[in-house]
Image (cartoon, rainbow, N blue to C red):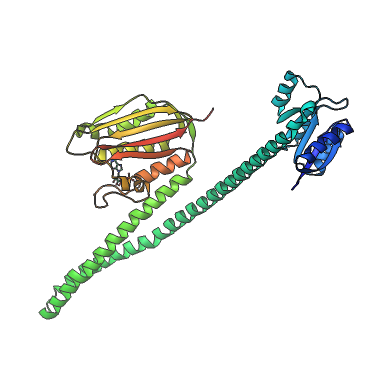
Length: 391
Ligand code: ADP
């Protein structure tokens, strides 16, 4: 079965063009073609229709293969371009390939043409496929970015608007507490029969008080959640001010804030060599404050604490590591701890389960990432990777 193919032949000799087409037909192609031998004709042919392949003679009196190639490139077309020539020296062949021709075939060895065409058509299709995939990827990423912005706004508005009724509930619950106190005082009055007093005291001191305490505890929990959501949402919208950062200085500032706490707890806090990076100073300060704060918080009371901070360049990234010899994190929690409000031990008194969510969010916005390695009972290593930008 012959394969239809649209060939633009850049050739001054009609005979040679016929031979080329014959060679293609003999190898199972069914070419529709046009022959051009000047810049004007070539330009018009490229504009008029889509081509699968260009076969160009190397040397023509009125036109040159390299001009033809440049025209194709300038029109942004990615077409297989094969040079077929009678006499092409090695240097000329190399120059043609360097300029962007895909292959060259000697007229005396025309049998090489069909395999070269087959290979180049296949590769051009693969390039088109890759471009389509890349465009699709970009479209999906832009879509995702839009959706994520929309969700972020929804989150912010919901959390913000829920705060108002919550404040009202808290306020009225406190009003009810005051009313209860007044009722308690009224119960002291003498003209109330003791049986009624006793009944009312149970209702006031147990039933209503318990219910009120539940309401207040729940509203306080909602308040913490909403405040946390607003904090993360604000962080996602804050403008990033990316600058070159001397990490030695930045880390010294962060470590300084924990110096007292570490000394009191007898913890060794060591900072190694740190390559510089590019990022938002305040946000990266927050990242390392959260990580070092956690390293201190989750130490094992059974052994002296050691926290090591280090950094290195890895390909096109800088990777910093905060390592501790604390309680560690079991494998099943190693990913969930980055999710909002997730804590390995929800009953532990301090912490709201936001620190690592904030770390991850900040790194995402920097085009970087964060991950951890940990062994329960031995300690954890939190890594932070930031891309090196070329400026
Ligand atoms: P928080 O510390 O406020 O609970 P984070 O988001 O900072 O919230 O951390 C989530 C959970 O991950 C913590 O509750 C803790 O269980 C675990 N975790 C974080 N850092 C460490 C660490 N260095 N060692 C052991 N566990 C940790």
